[in-house]
Length: 428
Image (cartoon, rainbow, N blue to C red; front, top):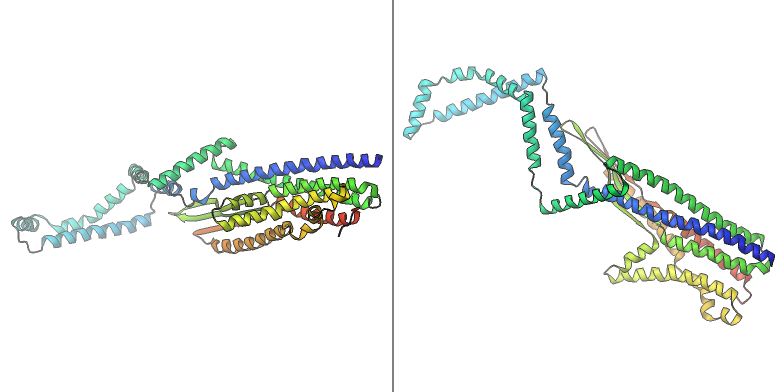
């Protein structure tokens, strides 16, 4: 009796530890998903690389800087002098050719007469180098550069937005204001730095919590080995073991299992001699638990999606719950209840219908296939040259929820095997 009380107290304490860390893991998983969703929304390619407003801001800044700080070397001035002279001479020759054409109107004939008698085109052509120098001096004047810069910026600001672009810009500004207030930041760099630091900390903590939960399960299995000959303690130990399994199942179903994250890490190209850089452009992000997947499927309008969602709910969630419950009832109840067809079926035969192990394998295969596909597709986008650099990154990864769920499956199989040895009733 004393041994049983000590066993219950010890396992209750261990169960509380597993429950506490399981709850913390669930909360951190939800927090991580929320932060990553905010990060991906803020850095989404729609609001960055594909944003007209973002391009307008980047390019206008470059144009403003280039116009205000435009300088010419003596060699460039000499070459420009030649080009301007040729243009002026071409204009003079063109005007002279037009005037020398046969004129039919009185006004045309008078103009032709005046030009021939009062205008010496050779004298004008001789002054062309002086005209060219004056033009170049005007262009290179700081005051004129400033005015030209204002004109250029005015053209950018005068760009008309369509209704869709205006709506997208308003949506972006609303989102940015909300996220800045939420995380108490005021710039993009502060936002990305703070969220990245938080995610790194959460990632480390969640894996620590997962490890603690697995240690609790290993302790329970070690007790089974140590107490394998203490038959009077088996029923108590088994019922307590089931409670550990329920916690594993609950966390495994609700914590994120797989995360798909594809992004352009850096896009850098040269425009007018200056670098235009876009960083952390999120192409796609999703993070789902098993319950999230079921919820998404049953909310779809297509009947086949709803059917798949229902099947996952029944065979991957309800069946494991019924199996765990039935094993406890079978062990504790009287022979009539313990050997009822319903209890015996779920306790010993429902394993072949349970899809929990199938889900584990399916998610692993999806991860391997999807990860390989993203790696190959993103690799095709990578470019590195003197004028253009594109670097992509694939952050797709299995999450702690997957570790907990696969631990539940293995732990459940172990308990089923143990039950066959310790049941006081017929296990066949």
